[in-house]
Amino acid sequence: MWTYGQLTDILRQCIKFESVSELWKNQPTYLIVQILFIVGGTVTLLHAFTYGGRRPLLWFTIICHGLVVECVCYAMDDIDNFWHSLSPIMFFGQRLPLYVIILYSVFYYIAIEIAYRSNQTKIGLMANVGLNVFLIDLPYDIMGIKFVHWTWHDTDPNLGDRMYWVPWTSYYFHMVFSASFVFWFFFRSVHLNQKNTTKTEIITSLSAIFLSTPCGILCFSILYHPLHDLYNVPTQVIMMFLIAVYILFTILKRKPRYINSCPFIIILYLVVYYTTFLFMAILGKPENEVSTGPHEIIGPCNVTVPSFGTELEKRKYLCVEDYNEDFDFHCTKEVPVQYSKIYTICGTMFKNRIEYIILITTIIIVAFTHFNESFKVTKIMKKSK
Figure: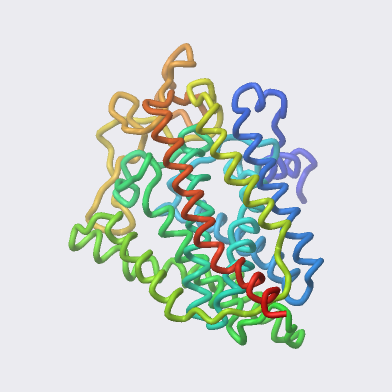
């Protein structure tokens, strides 16, 4: 029999609450971003129930899929290579913030709702969703790591090729996994308005939840690891190739679905979403952001381990005397001691703020130009009447 104390300890390992006022004091931008995603999750849920069909099931399936993906990442040592800053509600030993689970509904649901309007074929929908997720994820990843909302493993060769400190494999991951999710959820038919039988919906939902992750890992590994590990092709080149292939299938398999309604609530949310990250670039002070919580374990610099079962190696611990990450320890009295798992890191100031402003602005222009291909279908319908 479990004692009350043992059950309490287990519960504390599964879920822990943090002080909102303390988190606001240390990382105000992080709380703002979390609120942004919680609002986004609410917006997409309301949209799902308002327009009906398979959308409510899609929303809940996405949430369950996201939870499975995160659990797999923490359970597998080879891909357990990132650490989130603390949020008001944390799961799994302070590894998983609540908002990250909701984040998947923002990325996937919005990406699918947009792509659904312009791609009736499955392969076209998969490719378009992957591109949409990439464009939605870009400002979040770039600004999040700058403001120490999370950190990555310092020397993992799979994370070595980066853009503004974000590993290219992070974008690769989202594009492949979202396409895999679409494949399984729309396995029987590419429809959101027409419900299938209860049995079919249960099967497709469970398939999307549990099969899209291993399928995503397989697709990731088949293309990425041979090119990167055996032929030394830089990750950014592989990523550009993947984007090109997705664009090709998105265009070649484009078959508009003339829907006589415009998702104004989603468009409005996207405007708020991108504006938030633009204002972070314009007004934010990352050097004032302080992240206290679980990070990569501090340890000796000379201890290495294999990376993802290959001959490539990575340091087992973060070497505080020799690391290359966009944070430092200027806000702490002393550097963390050896084998520290929970410690404080500090953000660093912009070396060129204008560069980040132009970067985020460019992403916004490209994103809304791409999304407009789907939104203008409504305009065509209205003109034809």
